[in-house]
Image 1: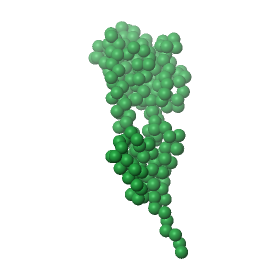
Image 2 (image 1 turned 180 degrees about the horizontal axis):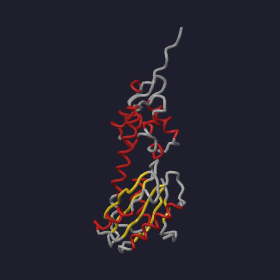
Image 3 (image 1 turned 90 degrees about the horizontal axis):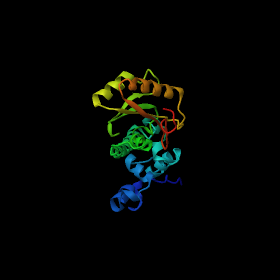
Image 4 (image 1 turned 90 degrees about the vertical axis):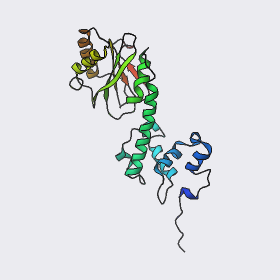
Length: 232
């Protein structure tokens, strides 16, 4: 007689093993990353529970939630058992987490060192799969007036409009600028384009008595400072 396929439904687990019930009874802090993702996706497949599916997805990014946050909806849908709705739920949840950290970063209102810039901007760009170029506008006490994205996709002189940067600086009454961009590849070495845009903005700003104080290259876990390395 042919055996019936084994059911992997979470509904048949004990309450202590069900992610939702576990969260309700013991709090979210006791759940593993896979269990939290399982709650997001709701169900697995006929041959795999939501938790097992979540473990498989996490294993593909070395159990690193930051790396998981870099996956697109399309990439997540490559996993068997993940349709568009489940992929969207995962992407949305990780974006909420990123914005929560972003909100914490806004508490840094005075720049004291290159580390302060990294703490401010890493949540905004450290995990992005593409390059973004940002300007941090400072007053004469090195307090942040505004941190704003200037371009997206690559760093070249044509993508960073010097006139718009300086127009914004004048409107804010800024006396100092810090340039920043991310390297999704993880390399901290500045390119020739990075050096050229730094000099271009530095020279243009000097005419308005505005100083370019630093240019920070940001990766997921580290940064490179032009000022610290004597490149300004």
